[in-house]
Length: 401
Image (cartoon, rainbow, N blue to C red):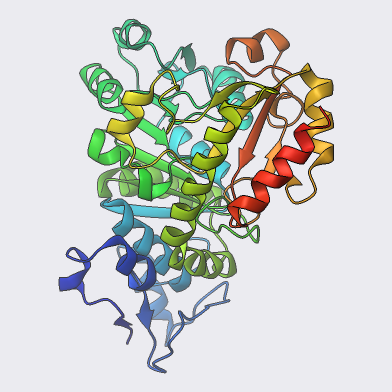
């Protein structure tokens, strides 16, 4: 019999820092300190009748790790408590979470309305894959509430967005888009990966479903892939349930265990990364080799006031344009000595990438231009290095532009 590490009567009355360390964890009869890692694909039964009963029941009995696993369940419950959701299902990656959240609900002939500012793989699902299956996709400028209202006026099964968007940091009015979506009878899905569960609460702002790439800040140390879908119990059971069970986007127990360890330090890491990112953004804004800085925590951000209403801090990512176009960008990237070039983000190590030639390279140049992703744009993910060392590295690299 397992025992909860955080008593249920305390779970709703403690701070996020406590949830991140103890939430969702259970102890086996061995009374281990660290969460147990159940590396097993299947489970056994005392007799054939017990196996029959397990498959006939409501799923509370573990029968196969593709369906449920004790270590994965601990991760799901900890993230659920942190997000304030009714239910959570973990997935093998962030893109598995996005794909499953969309496809478990959609049918041929339905409509999806999405912001056009999306991560490259999300854009591929919405703009390319869904229409192949007879689902209409409408892409709008997510900053324009009038565009959302017009697109949703005829109704839509789902609305989808990222806020802040990857990489150009567009901020979407989540409460208003939720209202417009619900008025048309649809559900609203928010990819909250840039903000993390600590800086923004989409469900509290009216969203129905939140998705994460846990690969990013939740792991935070570049070790493993993972994702999560958080929503109502009804959505997780009735819409996602059979889709998840039979298509197999499940998270491995080992990765779930690593993500549990990542959650323990999430608040400490995100707070430090936000402070470092803000300092770098302020520094870059005054630098003669930088022509534009995009950071939700800067008053110069075009949606600064909206970001302040929706987010508690500006986040750990900064985007900026380097003078000299692609050639200037590449000279800057190649001259960095501490910061690594990588398309990942949210890591304890500071990472930098050139979106036009990496994460968004499959988009046509005119589509990238629409999204503000020019050849000069750099995306910087602040890590845990000393702030002064990062600023010194950025300065010496900019001197060579």
